[in-house]
Length: 323
Image (cartoon, rainbow, N blue to C red; front, side):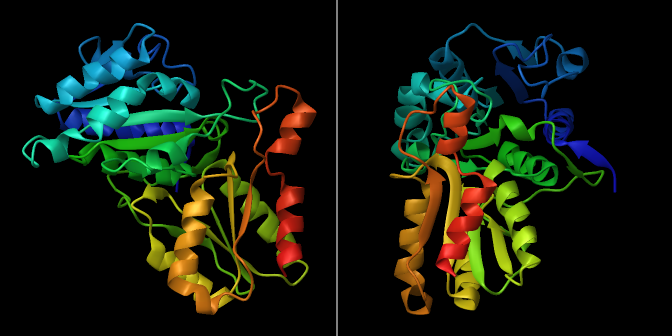
C-alpha cells in the first residue's frame, strides 16, 4: 500500500470530493495560492481556481458566517480556521447558528458545513496558539466532531464529513500533518462515530486521540517488552462517541486510562470517564484515570511546555501506577 502524509491524505480527500460534487468549495486564510499555513491545500487552487478555493480576509467570524449562508442555500462549504485558538472568534456563529439552525427550523434546513481546525501545542507557540478546545464543542448539541489521528483516518473521516448534511468539525493536530501512513487508493469512508482499537491488550485500556494516541501506542509497545499488554483505543470521533467499543474493552481489561493533550478539567476525558462509570462500573478494578495537560496556560518555554503536556514517560508511569 502507498504511503502518504496526513496532510496529503486530507488534501486528496478534498480533491476527490470536489471533483464529484460541484457544490463543494473551500475557504480560509491563505488556503489558495499559498496552499494554507500547513501545506494541506497545496495544489487545490491550481486545479480548481478562485471560484472553488477562496482566500478570505482575516475574520474568522466572517468566514464561518459566509460558509453558513452558503450551506443553508444549497452549497457544501469546507472552512479552515488557522488555529484552534481562533475558534474563540467564531463562537456566536458556530454555537448559536451553525449548530442550531437545523433544529430551530424543524429539520427543514440542512447545514452541510465542514470546519477544519488545526490543533496546536508542542510547537513552542505559547498560550494563544497551542490550545485544545474540542471539549467546548462537545458540549454543543448539533455538531458532529471528528479527531483523525492517522493518514488513513483523516482521508476516510474527511470524506464522511464532507458528505454529511450536518455540520462537522474536524480537529487535526498540526504535528500530524507530516506524519506518514498507509492510505489505499480510491474511495473509502470511515463512519463518523466509530472508534478503532489500534492495539489489542489484556491488562489495561488506554483511550486517546490525535497526537497523544501515538505517544500511547509508543508506550504500549515499550510496556509489552515488560509483559504488560495495553489495549489502545483511538476515539476518532468525539460526537457521537462509540461507547460500545469502549465498554467492550473495559469489560476485558477492567482498568482504563484516558489520555489527551487538552487540559484536565472539563475535558473529553471527564465525559468519557463518567460514561464508563455509568455503563461499566461493576467491571472496574480501579478508578478511571485521566492523563491530560495540566490546568495552566500552555507555556512558551520548551521545558515548561513539556512538563504541562503528557510525555511518554508520564504516560508510562501513570499506567504502571494503575497496575
